[in-house]
Image 1: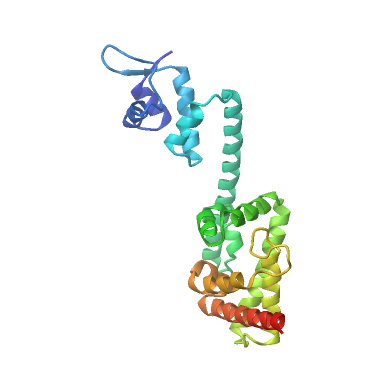
Image 2 (image 1 turned 90 degrees about the horizontal axis):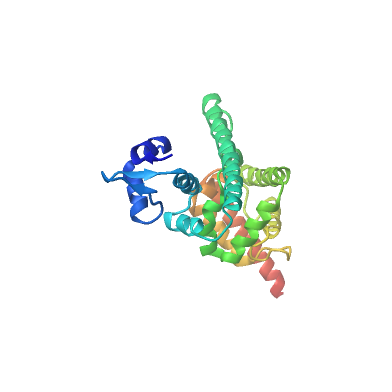
Length: 257
């Protein structure tokens, strides 16, 4: 069977102009062109179009899609991998939907907003470029591998521990505790150990995060509202940064003594 460009466009939910563009760049050629100039598509073209649209949904550019489809890879294996990738995307979208539902519930009930809950399902890899720019590609790769290697239960436990630490910081800041106090320095020590336990972070595996890393994060918490929100806002983040600075100065003073 053959289908006209209008029929294919209608079935696929795209425009005829898009199909003509795919033809022009060599991504999807019609099976034939009728004497009246109409493009006609058969089953192989429809299957190729299905893959094009699926890869686009996964975020690939047209040039990358063309390279994949024109490779020598087994088409069945490619479809199986595409099916697996689509399943992963569906699972992530379902988690995003649940996260949005939690946010709606918070707005309606006036409950407490938990960042880890409302961002569940939103890919942490969106910060890949930022992490690589600050700390290098290897740091991102190590952290990403560590995160993906964990089970859902392990991730949930790690997030819970993170919340406890963030809440402790926020409560201490709200009480106006001196950043140099024993309580604040105990929190700084916990923050140091927490960061050093994450693969890819400067100092990971040594038990201590590197001093420049701690100081840089403290400044990042203050100047980036995404992070400041974890500590109750800018004032909370300033308290964290000050406590980490005292912690680093005390540690380096002890090392040089």
